[in-house]
Image 1: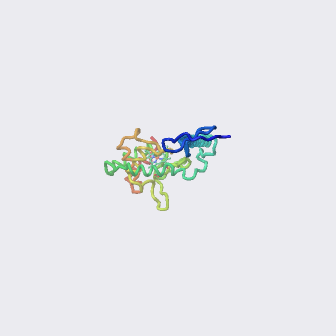
Image 2 (image 1 turned 60 degrees about the vertical axis):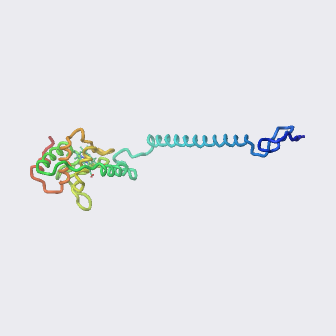
Image 3 (image 1 turned 180 degrees about the vertical axis):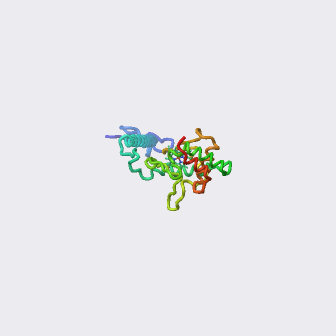
Length: 219
Ligand code: HEC
């Protein structure tokens, strides 16, 4: 049988009772109880954090396994993933808008001729020339647009509807995850503007010497 004996009062004025089993200074919750509650909530957070880490690890392993073994399209002949092209297109357009420049010089026959030399040597192999398309261009992914050809419902010739500054950006920086190279270490700044201004005017009647350069055999 448990016996009770009052032995005085504690600091808060609660009676201290001694029992034959253990001493109790009531009422509950005692400070011990608070300490226990604190401890258990601490380890609860630890568990959640551990679960979070485990979740991240599982996702990372899953992603790696999907990249290694999953049926991702890697051949040009595979059908593209939904929105695959937009992965580059959307941020690309936003970036070009932010960094777009204006040409440091205007157009003239000289500028077009210099641009045509650059185009013939560096670009024609992928983007074609007036009246001549590149056979493999459409079997690239993304395909290389033929820059002297009309396209779309409005029949726009190449990139003549884009600002020269936009084309300059693409020529200087290239386009990620595509065959479009960056020319900033291959061509001078002036050459990149010359070819960009030429392409802006690809829908116009160009002087005969310019067309002759574009259609000349590969150097
Ligand atoms: C090895 C092939 C290759 C060469 C060489 C190349 N390009 Fe490209 N270019 C591409 C491909 C592929 C794309 C399409 C990229 C895309 O759709 O994201 C492209 C895209 C472009 C575009 C954007 C077209 C559009 O519709 O917005 C321009 C402008 C362009 N190239 C200009 C040039 C110029 C100028 C040169 C030469 C100085 C050149 N390219 C050389 C492959 C090439």
